[in-house]
Amino acid sequence: MSRAAVFFGTGYEEIEALTVVDILRRAEVETIMVSVTDEKSVTGSHDMEVRMDAVIDEVDFEQIDAIVLPGGMPGTKKLEACESLMSQVDAFVSQNKIVAAICAAPSILGHRGILHGKQACSYPAFESHLEGANVLHEPAVTDGNIITGRGMGTAIPFGLAILEKLRGKEAAEQMAKSIVYQ
Image (tube, rainbow, N blue to C red; front, side, top):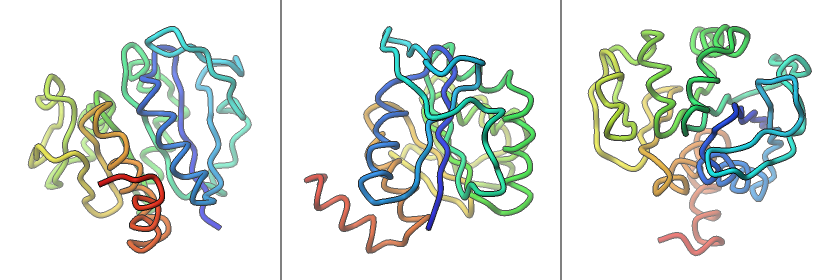
């Protein structure tokens, strides 16, 4: 069974994070919501507080197939400042495991040199941070083990791209149909 971890820093973009959790859980992908703080509740950029399944120190990354980084401010900065998460992002990339980031969060991958020679997208104001990438203006872009999305309005195709990478094209197509996504 595939397992994904979605990481939440204070000020995360609620739709980007929770849409991915919803799509993956509907598809029966074990998905945990993880706080990068010491608190089990994290407040988003629009003042919505969500209870997490775990804090980062409780995660066994050996059991995770995909890391998901939602955008939002200052949530993206909180994710990037979490050294233990960043070391896992680097490890996942080196192990060819899935790393997905949406909106402002692909800037983290750019800053870490992960996007060199890859196709990627982000929120328009963060495209200059996609260092070394061929920047596309698609809702979601998959290049190898890296998945990027543009923003809140593209959370569904981003979530479906993660599902496709974890469970295959047919699973993603079935999910799109079941949620009436065109």
